[in-house]
Length: 194
Image 1 (spheres, rainbow, N blue to C red):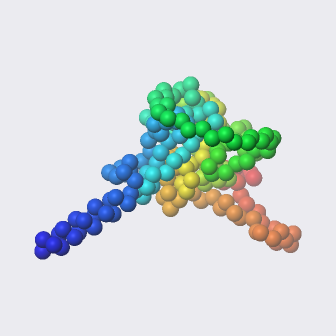
Image 2 (cartoon, rainbow, N blue to C red):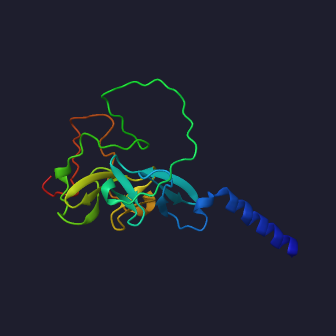
Image 3 (cartoon, rainbow, N blue to C red):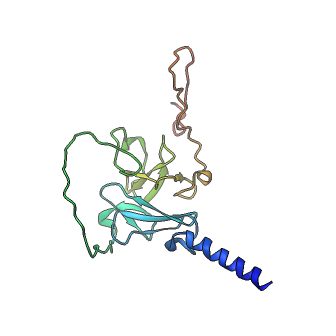
């Protein structure tokens, strides 16, 4: 009996060691500030640590748990104690490349498309993407991205696992092959006239 209990205890310890230590004891989806960057935050997903980054000019607000304009956030990030630099060749380009690891504001983001209240802070779903949302700050619409692998949950006003997000957007409704004889109409979920 004692050997069975010892075996179970050792088994539990080895499973716990597989998770990121920063996430042990934290709820799934817990977010907290990155200690070295004001614009980055960390999130625990299933016991593993993932990173998110605010769009340019925004800082992570650990109290409100969202990205806000830098002037409204008190940043306490530490400078790294050692910095190792490696020389590299730089090239310049006018092209903006957007992906999950390098957030930015795409050219087709129209702030007029979102009706933000003139006062207060509010998060609303993006019209065409489950992994993005719009932060309304005193009438200004600011595009935000969830951390990779997460979707925006409008009911909770936060990014969460896709299975919990209740996002009813069909992100890929257009057929791969264009057929003028088979038209596809997609309703705008925010405007019944479109």
